[in-house]
Amino acid sequence: MIRVVKIFLYRGFTPINNKIFKLDTTLNFDCYIQRFNGFAILVKSGTLLDAKILSKLAQKDLQVYVATNDYHAYKHYYHTHEDKKPQGITHALNLEEEIAHSLSISKALAQQQEVYEKLKLIYSTGTNLLNAWLLKKNEKLLPLEALETLAENLVEIMVKNKITLSTFNGFLDNTYSLPTHLVHVAFFSSLIASNCNLDLTDQKQLTLAAMLHDVGKTMLDDEVLEKPDTLTHAEYKIIQSHVDKSITLIKKAHVSNRVIINAIKQHHEKLDGSGYPSGIKEDRIGIFGRIIGICDIFDALITIKPYRGAYSTYNALYLINQDYQTKLDMKYVNILIQNMR
Image (tube, rainbow, N blue to C red; front, top):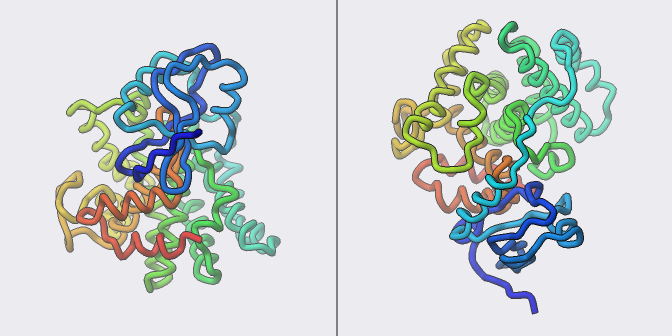
């Protein structure tokens, strides 16, 4: 009989990346799958991964979990067997062509009848644009006008239609990359904004700020950004520096709007003062910073990192609702919860 462990996810289990399992290796931790109110053991510690077991563990849509108190064992397995191949963009993109596609997207959207297809087109255009910029980031400024055009079109669709998180299920990438993260956070921020009585100008500014909020990470070492272990104090300071670096990059691209600049500057601040870079709290944190901060955390939880799996939408929002009550503005979290399906 399968043993089911009834422990809530955010207390006892952590999702892991099931792409890291390797043939003819031995597990040193139990692997679980979620079942109703608990978790069932899928493969036990000590199992040698033959082809049959590996195919079961590596199923495309299967989310595998490890007990939190065994996470150190998983990290050891991950470090021992991780691929050393470089991550990143696998095909060439032309920045000028992607800018042109973005600037003319209104015409392409007009040819689409379904809201889903319109959103999918904005998503693919935005991620391609940011990927193309990444390839040229040392030579080219951020393509601000193209990003503004995408933000404006996204907001218009959100305002005119009833959009929920499930609307995005078919096309959002479930594996983290910076371009997809920026567009994800823009989508989630726009969804919240369309449900909280912000005027159209504010919605467009918020969505653009969300598309820009983490661009400073392009100036940091990937080894620090993707480190699966606890960060040292020095490494944490490096991570925190991405906020100031983001401000530097957007100012170079001639963003002078203080609302957008403050939104990016404040998206890691927390209501209880535990955030960074300034440690401000409560009313000193603007609405835009609060919303982007929530969406930033939400997307980090629901996407796969090289060293970690993804929480489901439900479990990510459950975790945020339980563990961030004093840190995040819950009225905006509740908008995501109310628009889950």
